[in-house]
Length: 119
Image 1: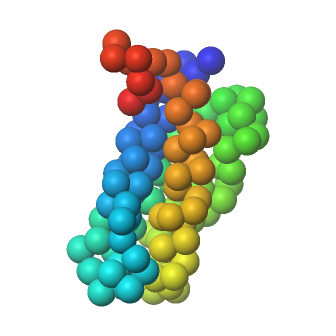
Image 2 (image 1 turned 90 degrees about the horizontal axis):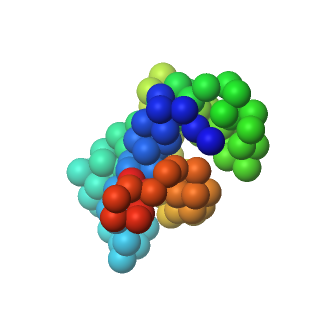
């Protein structure tokens, strides 16, 4: 089970992932491609996911190899430090394929809230 700090970072990751899912729901790639605000919102939340993942304890990461920690953190580093090299199609794939998969894997790792749902 996650300690309080890990739980907080996992919750940050899950909340950002759910935002990304909401933002792209019902959207097409051409809509995403023409919406600068949506692009920025997706990029920011993917950065948050990566930054929170970076802060999760090594012990927790090792206990949960089903989460691609290194890839998540690497994606954040590319967005922050090599932003000019990110293509919209890559960001779209992250938002529509990888983030929903991550949210599905993260949810069971968090303790339920009083409403019964994690996060």
